[in-house]
Length: 257
Image (tube, rainbow, N blue to C red; front, side, top):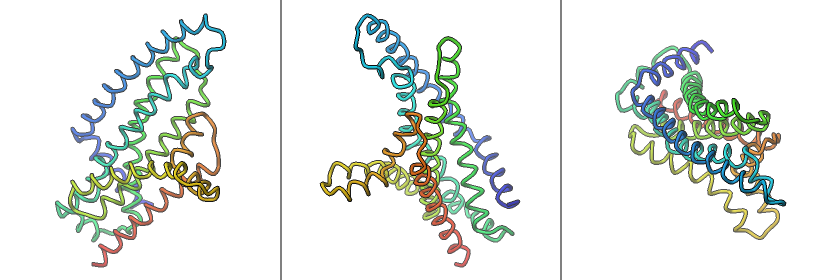
């Protein structure tokens, strides 16, 4: 695993010294600040109105559903477009700059290369998710927050980010064109959400169960509500493992060529 750690440190250092990463972090922070302050203000106004209304929906009076889950939905939307921008440089840019050939001749295996780059990308995804976590953390200084469901919800978004990272890393390994790598990654990120729409498009109970099992939305919904299900974790980890394996196969085929 020494080779994996060496590559991971190299890629993390490359991310952290890049102006593009700090630009992305600034845009994340700006977007979160605007949307979170608006959501929190709206929640406070709605709460003051609902206190005098008996029978008001419980979810509308719950900060977890009214504020935090909205923030997570914005975070997920941004990850769909940002993770491809981060992943495209890991293979496609190296191929374009011809530094990928040097990496293939270094004393590391294809698995070390893929794992090193994947873990580095996961580290950056974690930083972005942590930026979003700071807002509930600050809110806890003047409001009561149920931490277990909130932490599980953020863990779920991080796992979804890991799925994006594995798929986008695979897309980046297929081409030396940065533009193609980015576009295919975004399309793949969006398409994995569209799979869940098949639940409403079929009438067969068996087909519905199949679509529900492979629907990212189904598994994420339970996590963001604070419920951990083994089926959801198995699905998310399996998707990550599948695309990491496919990426390793692509890198190994490049080594032999």
